[in-house]
Image (tube, rainbow over all chains, first blue to last red; front, side, top):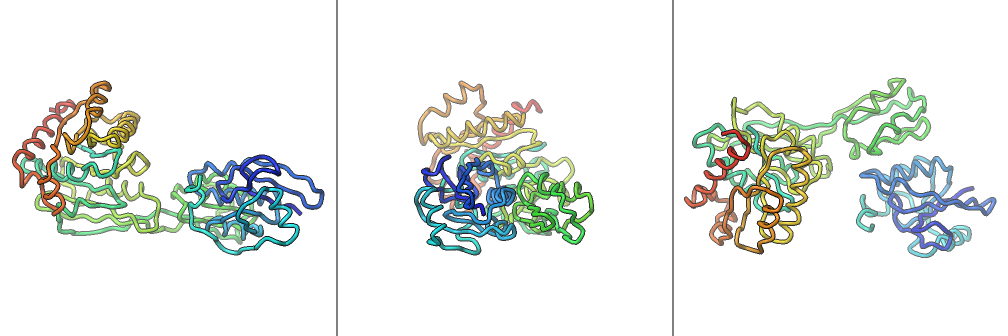
Length: 123
Length: 285
């Protein structure tokens, strides 16, 4: 299975990005093979609906779960409809996030964890 | 003739200028004041109009029949605002992101999308003495101001023939302001002699130049700050059409919802001269 981590840079030692729809990168890790790839989040510069577009992108990447800091109401609806589980953490590197996920240390959330436009105010 | 009153910075005195210009003109002309600051209309606080009617403003948002959907995904591809998300044959809609363009409905090859009106605001109209007054109110929680602005501008119901329309625009230079100022014969940019006033004026000047609307500047609270504003206008060859001095008694009048031109004859003269300057600058004497 594949999971996505929101990231501020393009490698495993990058700080994870607590924003979902407006994160800079998605690191997509294949837990079966141990390989990973990095995708720039083109939705980050959308005028509106960045969370929806990000969720659509991840659905196309066939990820089963995403690790991030916060998800807004629209992103949450889109991710749920796409069958992508949401796990949250507060800080750390992408590598930390994947390790914590594998060890079952992360909290799964359902529904929005923050208001719309949170990521805009943090950028 | 349509004269819009805009500014980059908020709180410079757009409504003061719009209302007092309307009150000055109505003595000799037929005047309509349109308050297009639909997020916070306030001209009525000074005009105190008697409202005579209202109409809802709606945008058409998509409703998807998933039984008909063939999962082609075109609706999602065409949407510039991420308001419709096809996930196979499961299609999510986000009405508050929708701008009501109708693209998804038009492109759906199997007719699975119909449109339903979503109420986003209200237009109200009436009279304040001889002044026709129209204003828009954006519904709380709705982010989409331009359709409400356009509904105010399209409203003709109590608009006298040949009236001079004065548009009180929202602050800033974003879509609702562009919607307000577009199509004007002239735009007054109201500013104040402060660093913020100057900075935001430069943005507003860029906007009206892009829109190709003739414009001039009104300096409110003149004498308050520095001379950078006048230097800028001179360097850019921008006409300063009027200056309203920074006076405590004017502020006190405003704070009580008063009308400057009715309380202060010297201000009335400023507005009479302003109208003349607009006509000269707009080349419409």
